[in-house]
Each structure stands twice: as structure tokens, then as C-alpha cells.
Length: 132
Image 1 (tube, rainbow, N blue to C red):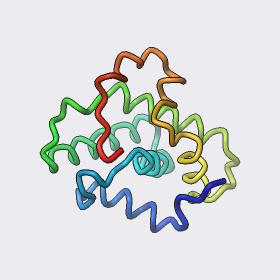
Image 2 (cartoon, rainbow, N blue to C red):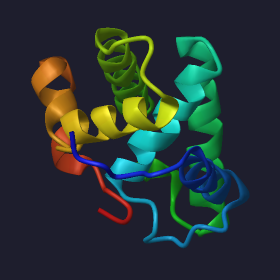
Image 3 (spheres, rainbow, N blue to C red):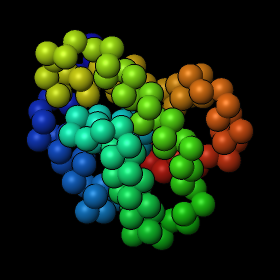
Image 4 (cartoon, one colour):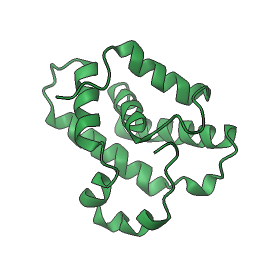
């Protein structure tokens, strides 16, 4: 398993950077989205994690002057559901760092959600990824 994160503090720093908007406009690539999703899901229900991710992403967009039109609620919900599915497949005794690394390793491909939820393919051409 590839090791993207070494400590929980590293993951918490990613979450804090998003929530406080101290992460730069181009400093929040897909893999960091996944780490935040895992963290949110670890501490909340799927719906609560979705709401928290939505709020954080919209705050980030607003702070950096990025138009909200790049945010796709269906896509965020699909990713949260996909991350939750991956978490449920893992050994429940794994550490938060190991779970995060496993999810990032498995879902690091941006197209994973479109493979799992083909109905969202309509969103694919217009999606804009901040920080790729």
C-alpha cells in the first residue's frame, strides 16, 4: 500500500487548510479531497460528511474567488458515497492513516467516480478540477 500520509496530524493539517482556506487556490488536488472525505466520514454519518464537505468546498471557492459554478453537488455526493464504500471494505482495525492511504491509493484516479456512477458522466466534460 502506497503511503501518502505518515501521521494523523498530516491529515488534520489538510483538513484544517481546506476549512480555514489557508491552502492556496491550487493547493487542494483530488488526493487531498479524498483525505478530507475520509476524515469527515470517520467522524460523522455519510450525510453529515457530505454537508461538511459541501460547506468546506464552497467556502474555499468563495475565499479564493472561484465561481461556485465549478462546484457540482451530485459529484461531491457521489465521491462521498464512493469513499464510504471503500472505507467499509477495509479492515475496521486499520489506523486512520492506513485507511486514508488505502482510499487515496484506490480512488486517486479522478475517473473512478464516473466508472462507479456512470449516470454522472454528463458532469464529466464541464468539471473543473482545482489544483489537479
